[in-house]
Length: 194
Image (cartoon, rainbow, N blue to C red; front, side, top):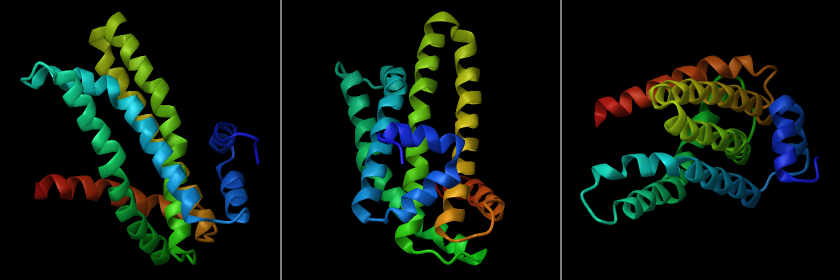
């Protein structure tokens, strides 16, 4: 494995199966999975700070920036981990339905590692958005959307590969369709319920 965590993440972008196999062979642990999740959430928070500042004028308070950033921090560091812990067993059951034989810890590790893989990409996407806000504000939203969609597609692929490894599936393709359906149905059903 690479000497640094970020070196390992960079390697996993090119060789996700190799890196996930090494992580599994190195031994899975709840503590390590939690570290992956919390680092991912911290990076998501850092990447979301410009958006927090962008929406803060809607808050009618002299301390609007602080309130907005604090709300984003709370959401990313306290609410998001609970949501991801709830999503991991659902993904494990999906993997089981397509022939997976892994463990609950393996499912959490695969999900949290894939989140860390993509979280590192959110920082440059955020910086590009900030630069475009100042240089080409008319194009900023569209470019952010395209880069965001690309990041989500990378994440789905990495998640599929990671689950294929931890669930002992022959191919990541078997997880792509169920994950795609789940990732489409979940937000739509949540929006319908709220």
